[in-house]
Amino acid sequence: MRSDKKSDSKLSVCYFGTYERNYPRNSILIKGLKRNNINVIECHVPFWEKTEDKTGNFFKSKPKILWNIMKAYAKLIKKYIESKKCDTIIVGYLGQFDMFLARLLAPRKKIIFNPMISLYDSLVFDRRLFKKNSLMAKISFLIDKWSCKMASIIILDTPEHARYFQRAFKIKRKKLRVIPVGADDDFFSKRDGEKGDSINILFYGKFTPIHGTEYILKAAKILEKNKKIKFTIIGKGQTYKKDMALARELKPNNIEFIEWVPYSELPTIISNSDICLGGHFGLGEKAARVIPNKTFQMIAMQKPVVVSDSMASMEGGFINKENAIFCKRGDEHAIVDSIQQIIDNKTLAKKISLNSYNLYKENYSIDALARKTISIIKNGDK
Image 1 (cartoon, helix red, strand yellow):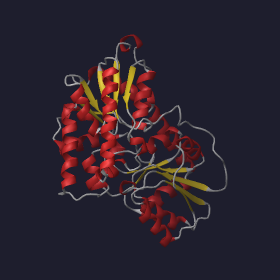
Image 2 (cartoon, one colour):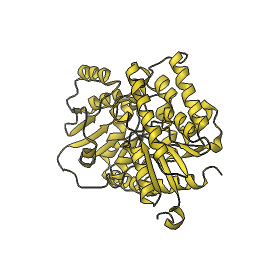
Image 3 (cartoon, helix red, strand yellow):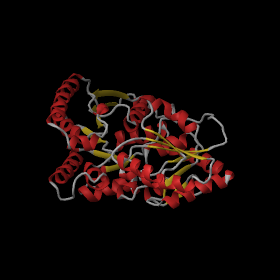
Image 4 (spheres, rainbow, N blue to C red):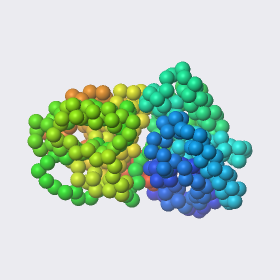
């Protein structure tokens, strides 16, 4: 059910910043608002689209990148001044730096901040690019803290992630709201895949510590004795060289590595899989606080999904052996056991596929997310 068009037609939202337009968090919210009769003005200048490792590259950048972002901000100021008046500003992901400009341009307007991640947590504890007491750690902490302080409302993807922001940056609980990431159901929907004798297991994502790709490689090695099982691992990133070195050492004969595929091809690849690895399998604390984009994309396509047994998963409505298979993080044997449960029980596989799709429709579809967002826009500061 969509929002009351008559009451919402007066609402005008400025989606603001140098955000990555095609990143699911941004594109889904924008599409959902437009679909529900909200006037969305995109005050956007591209910057992050061409930056592969957004957080790491910025903080390790050369002066040229700083110069480029200053040029982008000059264009953004001009666009904002020329744009029509709006009721609310939403600062898109990645938006910590954009928050400073947004508040400067609109000192009294309601600004909803959509950070998605903590720079401090990602750089120091997840990716371990800087030591905890380093200057860059302190700078990233202050950027997180002050960007949140300037926001009227902060939206995060899970309750556990919101609690982290509350603790780490001393944010008042009433300022925090939760909108899950979800998936674009115009794009990710059930379709017939290619059938064969193999059992195809899929993982895709950035190679960063949170994903725990090393444990997937070790699990594949254990399972190679079953000649029917084939893994497809798609991605590249921070831990790629280390993980490829491990792969050369283990020499599993059941993995196809693909560095990158166009986003448009993901639904076909998912449809051709039998089991999807949708969880974060790394041991970092952040892995327990968030649910990956791919989890929602996979359940939207009615695939049996293995997720981590985290608080985020449980609070997100996932129930072990009901709509997902839970897996202990940081343990290749747990991944093997989770996969084996699905292989050995076709009835269970069908059950969790259907139930996870029902969970998706209720909580994670475009319209479900739009309803939550519109409610926050209209009533979020009450």
